[in-house]
Length: 252
Image (tube, rainbow, N blue to C red; front, side):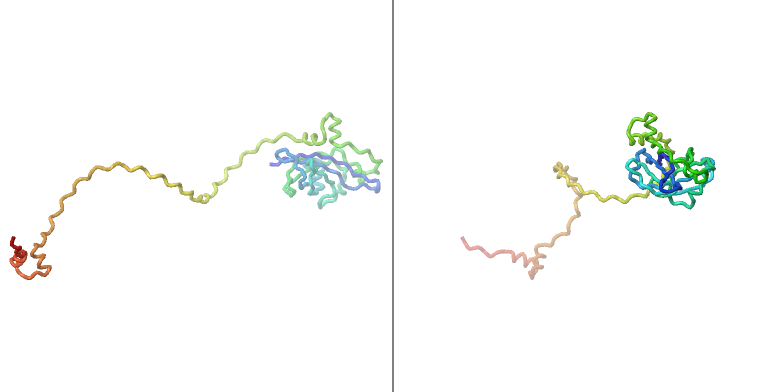
């Protein structure tokens, strides 16, 4: 949550060139974020409301502005010149008391943060004169708030004084409820295959296996005579036996 700190200065802008004072007041505010840092050189939205009777009284005037803060977080505008549906000149300053409420949106929009309401303890003289008697001579310009602070004992430059205006940190808010679990993410990509390990040493020779069961006896083979017949011999077994005899050898 952003915290916005305001300074408020109101005075009548008088003019020697015209007999009637313009209907506007100067306004300044110092704006800080939730970390107590100055919001510098930033466009901010501001809404000013004038209330009659009390700090929650009737609204007699409302206007909005979009202004830029300076390098010190200070924004300056003129009440009576903003965007409005009311008439600033229609306010009867003699029928007070009046209060001013200031709201801001540090993002420059219209989501305003209500900073506070304070009473206009000194009715703007020239504006009061518009609804009363004739105006007297112009008074001397008043001191700035910084100059008043120095008179009251403040030691330091204007930047240090602006920094001293921040209030104490507010109490931390209650933690919000835990949100629902998000959807499962996509599977990751497969990793790179690792390098093959080195071949292991050869293991010892295993023990001899058990002898297998003897196979069945094979079919009896053919006799030499049957083989000779298959190879074309013609005759009986006795003839075949006789054919096996070789010729007589030469006498020695």
